[in-house]
Amino acid sequence: MINEIVKKNGLTYGAIIGIVLSLITALMYAIDIELFIAWWTTLLSFSVFLIISIILLSKTKKDLNGIFPFKDAFTTYFISSLVGLLIFVVFKIILFNFIDPTLKDTLLDLSIKYLVSTSEKFGVPASSLNETISNLKETDPYSIVEQLKGTVFLLFFSALLGLILAAFFKSKSTQE
Image 1 (cartoon, rainbow, N blue to C red):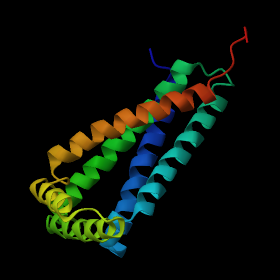
Image 2: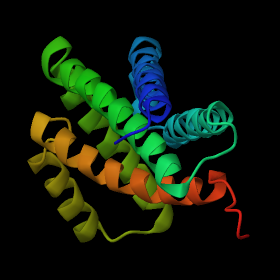
Image 3: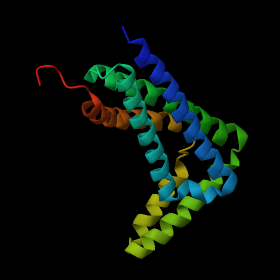
Image 4: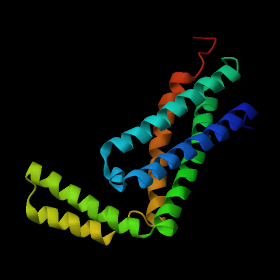
């Protein structure tokens, strides 16, 4: 049985993560769509995710009066991560597939331009670059199926991060 505090905090902070990441995406859309391919926006989103997760684990440990076993720490984190990522992916699916489906083509063009300019700087052979561009044009990374596949990868990566954070935030046993 899941502790009520663990469940409540996981769900609450998961909703916060999902809403904040969705707001960042909405702001990028509203301000400048080129922000979608900027490396630092990914770093910003990851930082927000990490900071909210740390606040969540700190608060939950405090709510449990410092008795925070590894299992509860990981469960709290994983619930928030799952809820947050689901809210975020639903928002992105709606944005890219229903609100503005043309955005996918625009982002593909921007990605190709960025790829070409970066590849030229590093001296990538034209044949390799053309093959990569061809592969990019054949896929739709913003389709519903691809977004769901990406969410599975993000959830796996998030679980690994959760193991690390849970190990850090767990309470020390009385034997230690």
